[in-house]
Length: 283
Image (tube, rainbow, N blue to C red; front, side, top):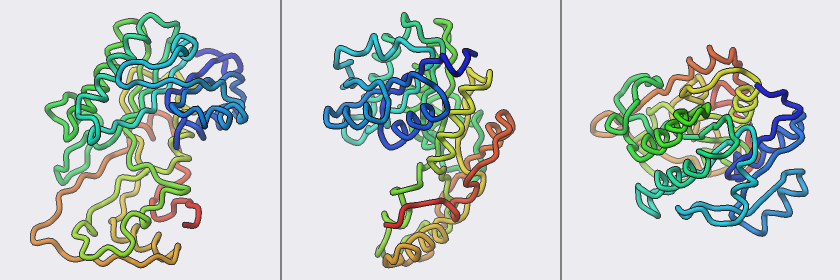
């Protein structure tokens, strides 16, 4: 791996996760962090933080003149949340096809692609990375297709790591915010698969310094309390109306996503292993 003091890292998508990741890497001693945003208003904010920021987007075709500069790096971190409900399920895979075409002949040697645990179907059991290898096994086939497009870059000699992140929480993303005052929620007994943003940032940072690649990892807090407990606690802490729960006629389907692989491979200790103890801003 290149010396961290000279390694150039580019982050596609300096949003809720990408921006704090970029500032953390700068604070960790990486001297050159590039980043993209789709908002001209955000450019000065990113640049003031020390990020070499550019306007760029995938609509799904590449937009902007800055892609060659963005891809002139050692490592590319791709953090583009798919929004299939608005643009159709093929939109995100097409974004990744277009991005892969740009990456193929770039100087990049390493790609980290942020995916999601929504690839796993709810089969009422613990799910590991090997449980979903192909789109037909997945609850979100388009996401696995996007993963496969990016992992196809291994044929071009690139190292590709896939991170299937759980529900991203922390700071202003407070579980109770989304259910406060609701009535008769039937999923109170369903275990959560959450991950605190600080742990995602720390895990990506750890991957950049270790020779671990060409793998798929779940990035999920190792404890999985029921939604009822998480919702009630965060509502009470923020003085919001606590939702009510009811037992469904038949048990709700669930999944428990295992983080055992990344814990073992990185020897990683989670800052927030239990979603009941996540750090938030007060709502």
